[in-house]
Length: 482
Image (cartoon, rainbow, N blue to C red; front, side):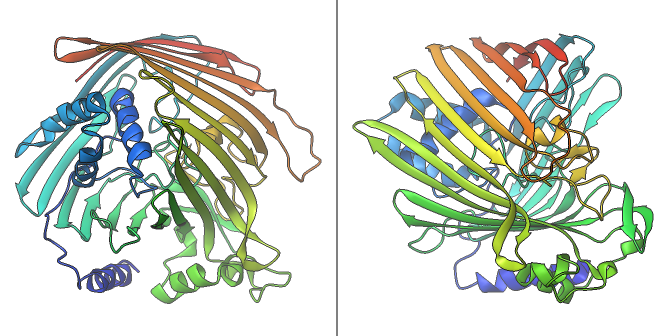
């Protein structure tokens, strides 16, 4: 299977070979859920310029090519982005370092989009660095470590390639959504897997096409079901993304993830993977109207999402609308219909005023997300759901859906200080089942105040609320970041 997938990836390389693939060399990536103040500036740039990518992490070289569009209209934004990216304009160096101390109450909570880190991790350090060996090869080193033997292996990978084909080998992260603080099918909620990813740095054709194809192995899990028995093993995992900018204000994307094999389910061949991609009903829906009647022959667990970002202007105020539909399965035995749909509508105003931004998101998530009858631990890696952080706000084997409302407000109080306030409310509820709901409405508040001290940023961080289990939680942290 690994050999066949490598062959497929090589074939993709041939597909884009009509371009001067290595013309611009390999590109490092901007931070992903490491530096929220800087990442907000990047999202402002994306919204204002219509940057044609609905996935993360962003390639630095492409972001730099779009920065010229805001140099005159938003000089402060350009200056902040340029100042941060300066750390990548060397052959090698440290690009991020953060140390954090915190105190919390007895209620243990998983921090959103933090690679499985929890509130009881009271001492934490993380870093990232790179070495540009030559124009076409970059070694990336990163990770985090906290007390209580918390180790976080992320951001360790080798990048090889150029403008239209970059290969990343190692623990490279994925975020297949335009949304800023959640992604239904894969995000940074769990640790990344060891794997290989192909993507383009420079958008292709007049439609600014972007692609990404990745294959990896999840960490060992228990409860893999085959022939009525359970076993342990490492499932395979495939990610696919494609996007196109249909107009200068509308970017459309399609995303897929496939979780398969592992344990007694054994390995699968390239033909089986292809069949699962083009005909998920006959590969994953056993019984009923499906041609698949032997449930032992089910391929695995699939998710798909269609995403849209509309970059518009009201008067002189730019804003972006996010519209996404994600499916955990197919519906009515039709390959073209999403089943168990999660609908998301978001609005981002990068400049509510010259210093403020606003991000509002509403979601309706139907049942059956992040659980699966073939994988008792569900859609997870190292004990945490790989998609939306909400997945860790319900029982590990609970298929209940939810209604979620979120609002995020930021304010650049001065040139050197920044305030961020986020509020989420979650109401876990079934969309189809009549089972009793054993949850309460949850309320989650996150307040971050960061200020510059010499060449570093200091921060105070509060995360508190009452979760869906009716338990109050609180965490107060102090950080120093470069």
